[in-house]
Length: 65
Image (cartoon, rainbow, N blue to C red; front, side):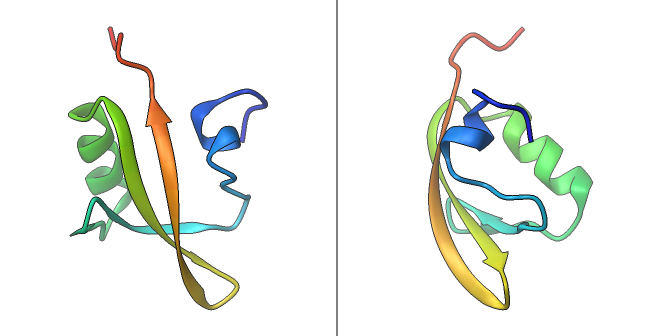
């Protein structure tokens, strides 16, 4: 994870597994990439960390290019 990135500020940690975005399941890394590429602004991540599921807010930049 890069310092000062959206993931950093959302408190994502190395080893976290993203299992959902805004209530939609994420099954593969390609699912994650696709969902993030079509989303701007705030979203809710559902992650698996140390065997428990947690919700984290992720704020994406609105100027994707």
